[in-house]
Image 1: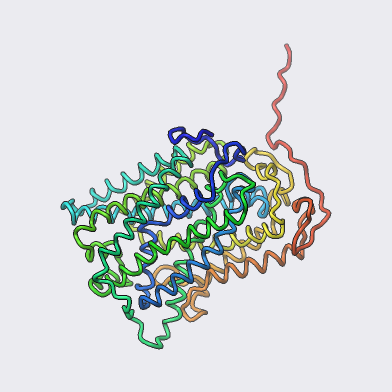
Image 2: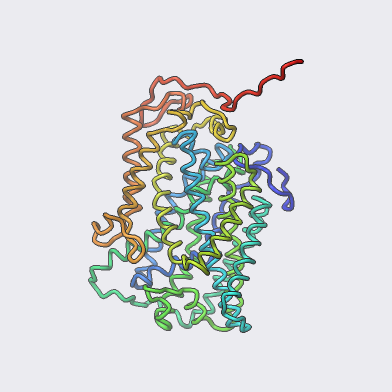
Length: 508
């Protein structure tokens, strides 16, 4: 692949040739941080205040969720450099040649959800800022134009591919960070770190609120789990793993900047314009504009534009890549245009016809609840395999072949699939999103949403138990053998072409 920005990327999910893998861990940091350094993250940062916590309690919940979420995410960065492909394809090793579609559809749904949230939040901020600044009419037509501009720009970036997206994120990381820091001067006079919150001392709702806020923050790093391979696959395979994991970890720790911005401004909104943080109908963007000094309206609009571009491109790029991996007849560009068009239609219908803006946030939470157990299976699979994979066998599905080390049972590894299905189903039953979705077991923890911890723990225990009780073939573990679990002398079918061979023409 050429290193020029203006040449359209042609690679799909096939292994990236070593000669074209010139990205660095720093590039992974820029893309992952740029995709989260946006208004959407600020909105998540406001949730501790919405839950009634004080500023310091909210900061503690934010730091806790961010550190734990970053630790869960970081190991998922290793598959890209190792296998030269995205994480969904790498999951063939643990879920089977066909089972890898689980990762593809999880990332597909997550990307559409976060792309929609990004366009909605950034578009609303841009229109609101322009309305206050130059009197732009606050009507549906203005929002439609703003959404269209965001969506079109993001689609162009994604069609050009990884290099162009990396270029955009290099600018976005610096620019958005500077604008957030500028907010210190905009709100310093109104900020009061002693903001007490709305929960009384000893309130029984404190721990449910604290843990709920921490889990919302934690969900942000976890949402990147299925996408890290999309970006890290351009990093050379011999890059030290510690550097790659550190880049992924620090990319999320750095989001303390937008989280802190959201938390601190939400505390100001709660004090000066409390109607905007009503838990029944929160409007963080409207509240931010209401408390902002006039000179900060332009930075607000710039944050909206830059952040929307960055988050939207990282989401949609992964979407097109995964769609092309599930349907190999689509090139990456064709898949990106197709999914991008569908996403744009979804954004307009959801915003103007079906009023799905709040529901899509819930949808994203549920998808992340299902993604977290998948991430655990990937990480434990990496540990038990000692980081050894057969890159050629991972591509069997994409080449429309069958057999190989990861064929297992008709293309499905029922061990990994069973662990994921059981843990995801149980985690969903523990979801507690009042007013949106409460699972059948959602009230068992006194109102605390413990779906993510349950999903992570059950997936880990069940997957290791299944690997121990029903050993996988020795050949999937490579020359050094398995770690922590046993293997079996089960024969592995050879890789063959699943398509019927063309018949030779009969001579007249």
